[in-house]
Length: 143
Image 1 (cartoon, rainbow, N blue to C red):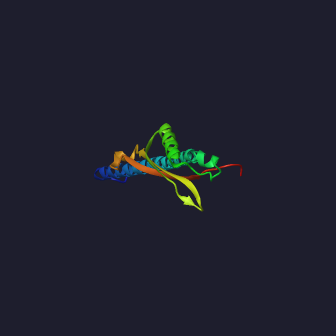
Image 2 (cartoon, one colour):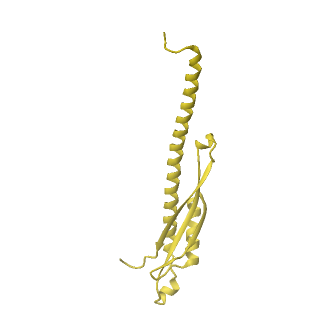
Image 3 (tube, rainbow, N blue to C red):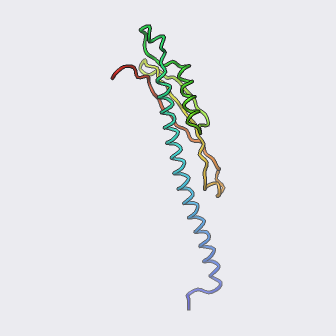
């Protein structure tokens, strides 16, 4: 004798189906969470490189006159936009110029969209927007 009757065999199949669905959801969550984390890292990297690009644009006229070497805001905005356009995949970005200890810096925040590949099959939203932020300062002269 096998230990279970025909009436119980349907219950085992139902349990296995529910358990399998649960395992698939867990796998989908792990896969898409890892993808989302990679997208956050990419957003941070894009923001850092865009801030670096903008931080290289200094107000030359002011520097030539002997004034402080600081970031040219208009030129930096263009440099950031050009970099992010070339990089591709950026949904939007903002640029600000905070002053820290009397020094003008550039702060870039980017937004990118991650398309969930598996969780959408289980009723979750298909996309999620992530952001990254970085601040840079103009480096002038040797350290």
